Image 1 (cartoon, one colour):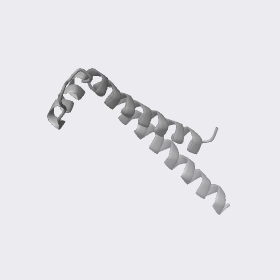
Image 2 (spheres, helix red, strand yellow):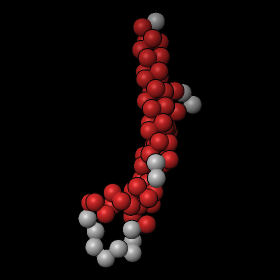
Image 3 (cartoon, one colour):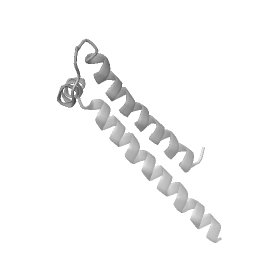
Image 4 (cartoon, helix red, strand yellow):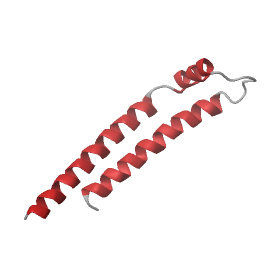
Length: 79
């Protein structure tokens, strides 16, 4: 698999981790009768930050791999 494929997979992982963070907060808050944004923010704080940190790291790695793959393609096209 080339660098662009690896970068796309890392971006997909980042999207899945972000979705898992929000789904975890929604499941945690499922017993609440009424919802508002401040209550959901409290639910996100209970989930914690490891999913957010891992998603940001995966996104950064994905963007780096995508950039390297694009630069390699441009270099090969110039030859």
